[in-house]
Length: 577
Image 1 (cartoon, rainbow, N blue to C red):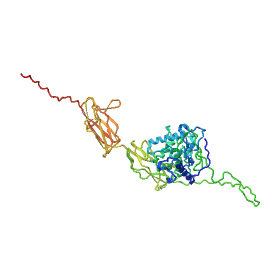
Image 2 (tube, rainbow, N blue to C red; image 1 turned 180 degrees about the horizontal axis):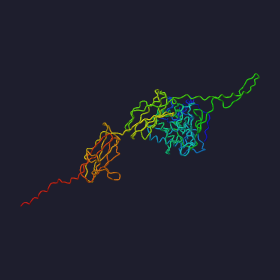
Image 3 (cartoon, one colour; image 1 turned 120 degrees about the horizontal axis):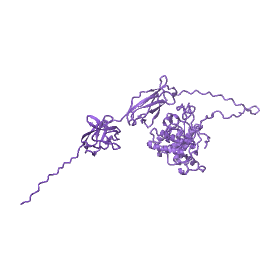
Image 4 (tube, one colour; image 1 turned 90 degrees about the horizontal axis):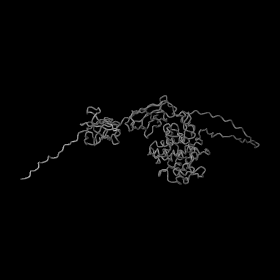
């Protein structure tokens, strides 16, 4: 199906009014509302902050088409999708989403429901954004794996009517080594895809041109700040973070509400294509072409030249004067020559805890002057499960008036050791600045048995009770603390014993040292069952944890007591004479 680009709707007050009217009309004609009592409306909407620092698309152009004001006709189920050539109403046609695209949205919703349940991401929101960004990948022009049959690119973000975002991927995704362009069905700019990209179809690649990858990435992007999308505030904040425009917000909300009323799948490549664009151009073409000048007529026509006789004669059109290419004004990013630490303290935390200190980085010119309004990207590198607050590995922060960007707090995972956080300037190729962060093991300073029952056994038997201990640190429960248990020779000799009680491994073999143990969430550690060989006596079990807590437990192996306390028989009475 070929896209027909006809009349364009200009981005601005007209779009806002139309979108607001559509949302209001949808609300009046359809139920239930988008978010219950918090249904989004044009009134009281969130205000964009005027920054593109956290925009997935770099605030690229988008489709401004709005859904029909009436609900779709009773939507057929997925198994009853209208076949090609079957007449359908406008509402029903608009509600149809190409099968592969729809599948990608629903799979992304399922993954987010498991990984970030508090976000409450509806797949219809992904569908609304996909509609506005690329017309559902140009009506479903994807192959069987979900990859677009040709690239979907936005215009070059060269500052000429758009944001100025210089190349960040050497043209790897968008083919442009000078400026970034939004890429794929969800229109990610390369600098955002670098950290937000996901592998949604399990092929080992993160491809912005694949709808499964792009839909999952969009879901994680919308959920990255712990927003609850079932609330009005969370929903609006998430949408505005994708494209920082009130018009965009209204347009997405109108499609979200429309898709909630009923959708169905249609064959790939047969979806309804939009026409109006916020930039009055055709940014969804595979290869963007410059729009014709809005001030110079496309053709010249004779101009009337009144003469005394009342006749007119054509005059030759004046030769156009070449317009010199303006020299771009340097942006704050262009002036940055180096990054410097801005007083970051030592970064260390216990596994599972939040780091108490944050990374502070300053952007400076070659003369050492601080530069404000520069985007600094902080990236966690190395083998670690540490993240920034919110679960992401990358965070982008704009320098303040003092030229300083403060990264979000780091959250330690369970992997101990050092890792690196690298600060770089978005849109500028200069040396990055590395920070070392350390995660230390969880510790305990005290171990105690949870029972006072003596631990005894007969030779060749098994101990009736298992050893259980509780770990604490400064009186508080010490959970997930690593521990070791060893049957030792003596109190002053921690060498592993070669006789007496023992544990069994999975194959039933004798083991007298256990490693890789850890306390549970309540600080408890229960050891496996103990057995005894034929050696009798008193033996010692020593348990140690990271942090220095130590406990020595006595084990006794003794033969069973077979003595009887029954009385001696009394002499029988003699018969009386």
